[in-house]
Structure formats: C-alpha cells, structure tokens
Length: 89
Image (tube, rainbow, N blue to C red):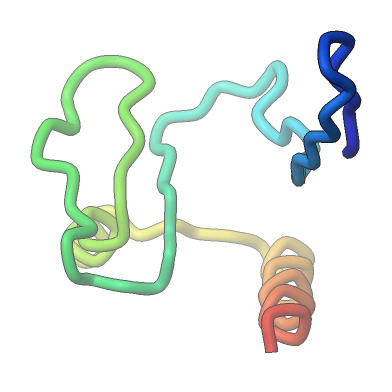
C-alpha cells in the first residue's frame, strides 16, 4: 500500500498481510504460534486466558495431550503445509 502524506507529499509504502480469522465463534482450548524452531520458542507462563503457546510447548504436550484430527482434516492440514512450504521455497 502506498500513501502520500498531506503535508509535504512524501510517499510511504507499507506491506500488509491479511489473514482469515479462523478462530471466529470457536471455542479454542489451546492456541499455538508455530515457527518450526525450538530455540527460544517456549512460553513458560501458559496459564490464564488467551495465552499463546509456542513450538516447545507443543512438543512438551504431545505425549500426554495429543491433537486428534479426522481423515478429512488431516488431508486439509497436509495440503496447507505443502502449499505453505512450496510458497516459502
């Protein structure tokens, strides 16, 4: 997006990424912000509401609290990961 300031006429350029709100009207019990890295990716204060967990939190919780998905959701998730990695490559 380009914008021209009213005073001085200087152009400013900004990049935006717009994402669909996947959490609208959904009861979310665990929310993770995954980056695919383990270094400095742990939230030690995971109590309370609206706490975002990180990569190491997911790895830590999987043995005792796995995330189960059906076949259709699994295929959609695999396709989304494939599309994301293809885009990033």
